[in-house]
Amino acid sequence: QVQLVESGGGLVQAGGSLRLSCAASGSIGSINVMGWYRQAPGKQRELVATIHSGGGTNYAYSVKDRFTISRDNAKNTVYLQMNSLKPEDTAVYYCNLHWGPTYWGQGTQVTVSS
View (tube, rainbow, N blue to C red):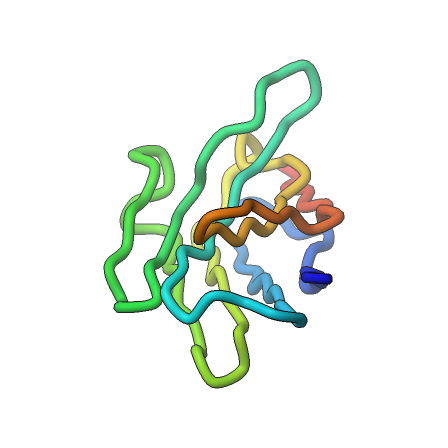
């Protein structure tokens, strides 16, 4: 059974920073993609950033140059460093792991006040 446990969300003022972490446990394919998605109230879930186990990354245009995704393959952990946060970044952020099957974390709230 694969589990994803997220941490690091919270309340921050506009212009501030937060770092999200997501640790995966269980039987995980060695070649995989981990990532972050977010869902704001009344909106669809959207991709924020992904990172392949080989290191390749992909970002949504809205967060490029502000957010940085990274991972520690030995710990099966993915991180999202979020800088220069804006009120429109407010959402529940979900961790995602995919290699054949797809798994989701429970979500962590990020609130950016203006």
